[in-house]
Structure formats: C-alpha cells, structure tokens
Image 1 (cartoon, rainbow, N blue to C red):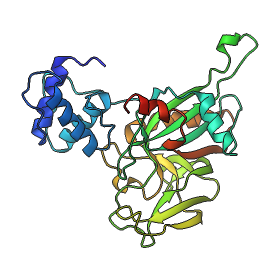
Image 2: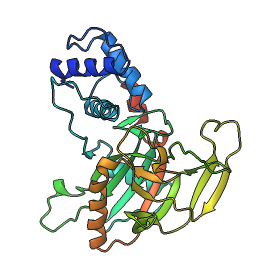
Image 3: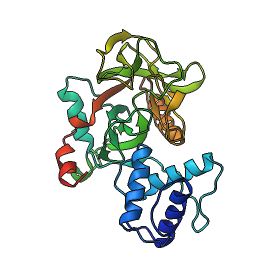
Length: 295
C-alpha cells in the first residue's frame, strides 16, 4: 500500500493531538509511527497492522471531529469508506452455508446474507464487543443468459459491509444478560426496525445467548429462542456501537444506504424472505492462509 509522506505527516500530527506518540512529524512510516498506529487501531477495534490505510484514517478523522478538532490541513479529510468487493469467493461462501445444512437461495438477482463474527476488512481479527469489527457479506446471484460465455458463467458477486454482529455497550443491560445472536441460519423480511427505519426484520424465531460482556467466561450463558426484535439495521458511524444495538446485527451507518438499495432491488425481483447465516471467522477456509501471511 503506497501512502505518500503528506498523508503520513497528517496522521502523525493527528495521533499526537489525541495522545499517541508516533515520534517526529517527518512523513516517514517508521517503527515508532507504526507502533503508534497499531496502538490506535487496537484501541478502536481496527485490524492492528500499523498501516494508516483508508479505514484507519477515516476513523482517526471521525474521532477528531467528535472532539471538535479538524483533520491536519496538509491533506484533505479521508473519503468515507464504501462497500467493496472481497476476496472470499461466492461459491466458497455458499459451500460453507450448505455444508452446515442451511438453505441458499439460487434465484437470479436474489441475495443471501452471511455475517462473520471477528472478520474485519478482509482479515480475521479478535472479536471485541462494542466495535464495528465484524462483516456482513451480501451474495448477489447474477443472471445467466444463453449469450454468456463459459468464462463469464457464475459471475455472482460478494459485497462486504463493515458491521457488528454483537451488541454495543448498553446503559441498562438486560438483567438476564445481553443478547448475542447464536451462529446459525435465520429468516428475515423487509420491514422497519422499531417501526421507523427501513431494515430486515425477523421472519422467524432466532436463538440468542445471554451473558454479560465483561464476564462471558464466568457464567453459563442463558440460551433463548424466540421473537426478540433481533433485526438487521443501520448502526452509527462512530467508532463504537453503543446503544445502536442491544443484540441486532448492525451495518455501520455510512454504508447502510448501499445495502438497503441492494435489498430493495432484490425485493423488486420477487424475493420476500432473506436468508441470513451467522458464522465465526474460524469457519473460513482462508484462516490458515491469513496466519501464514502474518495476519
């Protein structure tokens, strides 16, 4: 990844202004600057690789704005990250779902949704509550025609959205424990979250594990299955999930319009039920490769 020295200098100044020590403001991505970036990334739920990429710079700029500061003037503020194609292949993902015995819609222009806990920006990461460090993938079935060449067949697409599949920090948590959606397959339909915002709402019961995030290993989770309003909807655009989710699956706010447009298009093509499969990042076959590459 090529990042010019103006961007590095800008990041260094920004890090200093919020209490990190990247060393001298020299525009060089040296060891001290990389370490400061790693600390910032780790503190804010990002993949900690020491590289101030687009997501890291955007998170840094967002934090500065929230504190009433401006991004250093040497370079324009980073553009909001948008949804992007991912390296996981469509058919690999569909096989993971099918091998677990779950259904997978195959109709043209319909979509399947897969949430991956602990998978962020294409990397397997430690899952941390109250951060957008998970992913929701939208698998779009592309139509095939008689004119399609063999090389162009199966041009189905995957689009990745930064998300949280776990709840944020709540002021008043449920006394039985906070609801974490259990891995598995669930059915959703287009509707409105809490009767207000366009969303995917439960079209069937879901199973949650209730426990307190600060002490998940010190108690036996309470498992419940039912209609709890565990929807898929828009989250906030800050660094923390907070009150945006008490157990729902939330897409980071600045990306939500893109995913809702895809859902609307599929609905217009006749899709009424949207399958959503939640898995752990450890279930991905790419996990060994990521480890070998130092991720």
